[in-house]
Length: 238
Image (cartoon, rainbow, N blue to C red; front, side, top):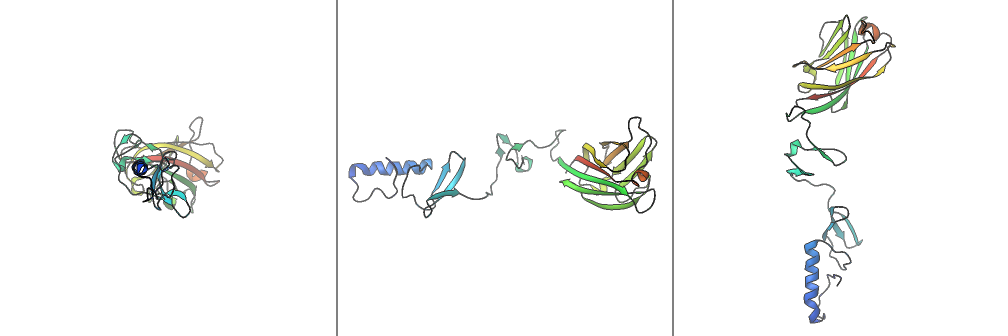
């Protein structure tokens, strides 16, 4: 029979009393009150359709979320067994394995937008880094001179292209890999290619060339006619 939390009463037929008691206990044990009546305010049920716990509002006669958020400690999600620090829960609710690459835990992915633009002094460059996602924001560094490191940037103009290094001193942790370095806008008017890499304790190194022959370029001259914007995705050890 359908559960009714107002039953049994003193007037209930004695042969039905145990049935009412058993049905109510069964509903409580299963947390399933479908078709029930006189459900107490604050009763908690499991919603098997939406896969969540809900609480009953007897005034509105509606079920609502048990809580908007939960504070709990877990040792695994979606079949993964890991410590909470190793679980990577995305915005879509899917748990992905930690980023390791070389089987080393604690790798962190970051993305920045590097702007190379005309400096205040002729023949020099100005660099700025904005965080696109979890990246290192670096305020504008003006008047960077060829072959002279300044405030975390080193620019070297070579015969077959320029090298621009973002040094470890202005980055979070040590760079273990540069995943991509793409020119997303180039107002200089010169066709350019960019390749990003890293070496031991060297930060982010960008090789900027002019295809197809790798002709010599000079960033200090190029940015006189327009800025260059490079999106960089990289991994650090912390």
